[in-house]
Length: 510
Image (cartoon, rainbow, N blue to C red; front, side, top):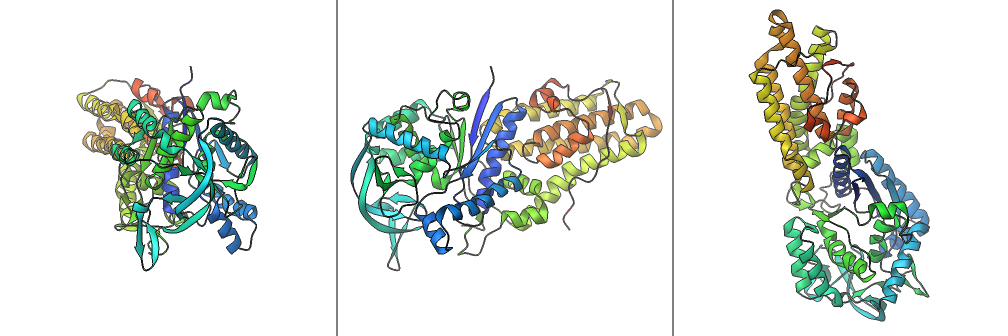
């Protein structure tokens, strides 16, 4: 039986230029997807664009465009971003697509049929920026304006006829669901945050608007537009051809294995989404991982603060693998990440250029210049060889657990440590001296070093796929070998190997 894994990243809200938060969420999800593939899972990875709501309607008007034309333009930018970030997504969904409209209306009708939606009047605070409703105790007044204490966004008082979802009736059922599925939300700090919020009391949720028109119309009451979050969240099942639950995609991949999201949209995913699904008799996703914000200094990046690092500019200057590696290493398990160009350059030099890149360059160059690109092992191992192999096996041992726990920092440290101890092994064994005294031993040392490079490249492949792809080509590694099982079995290279031409993988920043 295939081990299926369905992973999603938040669909981009196409209201402007892509920022570092977009890049981080997307790369993070891609790393998990690629890791699952090298662990022999059948992976389906989804991203896309969320294209409805008042904010989109206003942005289109400000740009003198029709909403759909505006969405077409901006969605193209985000689709190109996915390519630029080297994402391995299987699908890119847009909420303006008919397949999505069909799914949203079906879910709505199920919620109507279950009695979980009713018509009333909404009075309360609403943030256009967040497309979110806030309680009175989440509002603060500054300079005669009102803001959400949760997100910092400006809010306004809204009164209008609205359909409501009976969220209050799901309070105990949600708490029961969290209790039965204790790994549903991670990290644990986010889980505690959600549980405490639910325990404090849930109010029924307004799930339609009448003050604008850009969105999916409520079935049989078209003066209402379906609330953008009920609309947007449904992308996770509309991409699997829901409501056709007999479709192979849906049968193979729902419930989702992992939703990767930012902490600012945790409430929508960890409270509203499972409540909608449970009310519609649809199984909720298995897990939600909520990461922190990308900070510049001690502040969240924003245009108004002028502290934005633009991902596309960084990619053009430093490279996509370099950005991917730095973000994955710098931002720790679920916490906010403080990034800077200075730290990025230091990370590129220390980890990629001077460590892994240097290891590859020195070994490949030596084999080319001294061995005619060929190395043959006699498998006659010495203590130093066994020590390196055992140390590597020890470092590899918990990598799968680290990745399943989304602990990328320690994952990367472990893999880079393999590169470090391999560099030390080469220094200690001195193959350049062995060339004059013991050719067979020199070949064994080089073969072990190349085997180490192959292992490191497989393990780093989810994070830096372009550079490691070059190494696979140099080593003539076939795709069926590029997996964790090959590393665990110790059968990653033949006794005799021929390497191809090699260029410098990472240039040192000066």
